[in-house]
Amino acid sequence: MPGPAPALARSSCLTQVSYWILLTFVRAMIPTRFVLARSSAVLGVSEWAALKPSQLHALQASSRLLSLGIQDRAKHREAPGKKPLSEKKLKRHFVDRRRVLVRGGNGGSGISCFHSEPRKEFGGPDGGDGGNGGHIILRVDRQVKSLSSVLSRYQGFSGEDGGSKNCSGRGGAILYIQVPVGTLVKEGGEVVADLSHPGDEYVAALGGAGGKGNRFFLANDNRAPVTCTPGQPGQERVLYLELKTVAHAGMVGFPNAGKSSLLRAISNAKPAVASYPFTTLNPHVGIVHYEGHQQVAVADIPGIIRGAHQNKGLGLSFLRHIERCRFFLFVVDLSLPEPWTQVDDLKYELEKYEEGLSERSHVIIANKIDIPQARAHLPQLQARLGQEVIALSALTGENLEQLLLHLKALHDAHMEAELEQGRQPLRW
Image (cartoon, rainbow, N blue to C red):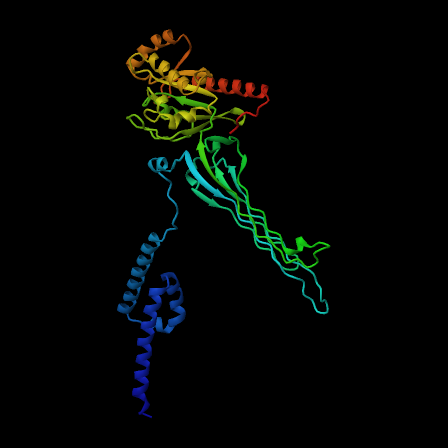
């Protein structure tokens, strides 16, 4: 039958063209490993054998190009993740003061309704009470380091309205605000809370009371009350949060004295270090580890200048971070002429800021002893001060062991004094 042969040939040719178009589309949509794995099953062994060498090379080349394209796209599809903040950005995110408006949740309203049931004409009132509004509570979290995560306004969760069948509304959930250790809470210039220990809490705003349903007003002289009361609004307050860094030891010194370098040398903290003054703009706390799992927190306070108690330089904004330190490490730049004047000026600024602050336990650290002219100033410094001076180099690590031993002795003396007075010492 010669008639159908041309039609059959045309249909076979169209089938092959459609097949190659479909295969090209599948290659573009599916990764190469799936295309190659499925090709033998789709084409069959006989059809693979019938392919010409030029067709086979073209197929392999297209597969390689497709594989390279997929690899390039995979490189750009890496799982997105938050990059660690640089030291410069961390400075911008440090906040030690915050004004916060807090409003407790509103209470839910009571409802007025009556029981309805077949063949029960006088069911009586069954309106439920509204739920109480949620409180707002400040909670100390050790993982929080500044007040940057605290918003300027908080609204508590409101309670739900009452329901029929004497169903009370659900109370609003408590809203917790995480704050760092050492947060002072002020209202109208008065300190209302001092959150200086992990886990401390303070109720910033109370939630409003829920309203009463008409079931509440049922009495012998009023068997069918229709009265119900709305929920009360939550408490509204304006609070001022102020962070004072809590640490065992505080390093105090003039700008560019090497405090940040010393903190990097004795702990795992990574404050910025540069050859210009006021490199440190925010307090940094480093942890020094000792045997027996003992930890001593050392705070690097930004540089103090003469007149800081009058709010010169960084001034009062960082002098308050020194208040919480139990003892001090006075860091002196031994390379400058007359280094003993630095100690006198530092104690004067501390005493002017708060009376008795300069009389706390302390140790004098003479830094930069690796500089030749600095070593020549050491005998004069010891003679002027009349007390032991720890001469070291934060850059080379010379004599750091003596500093660590003195730091441990000051910490142990502080712990004993706190326990004798019946107070819980600070632990990290």
